[in-house]
Length: 120
Image (cartoon, rainbow, N blue to C red; front, top):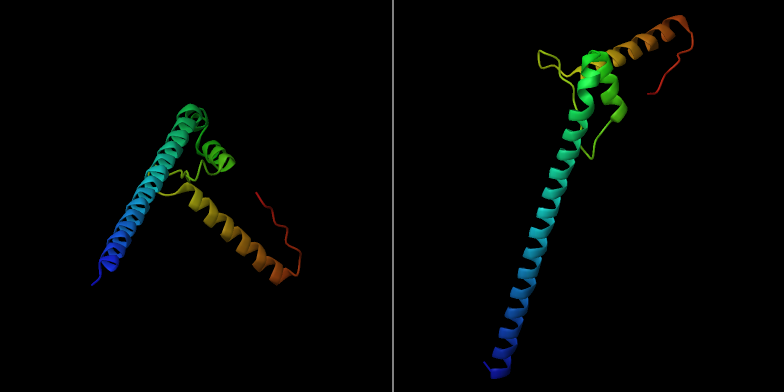
């Protein structure tokens, strides 16, 4: 093995180590950035709910459900309302809406009428 080949191998190995180290630092930086974003999103959602949720909760479950549907997602957080038994109220309403829609479709098929749909 010539001296030139040895030097080229050493320089190549150092270059590969440098590239691997830079990639590892970039990956670590991206993970920390995503973690910070998730923490910030949770903080925003928590503050929003702490400030407004009690007002709507005092008016009852339908008011709270309407409020949560109105705000939708908060910085990539889905906010779900559970009843006292641990059941998802929004899922229950979606299921009720699907049952209503199926009943309307069945009535249209049987009666030959027109079906009106509403989008929220």
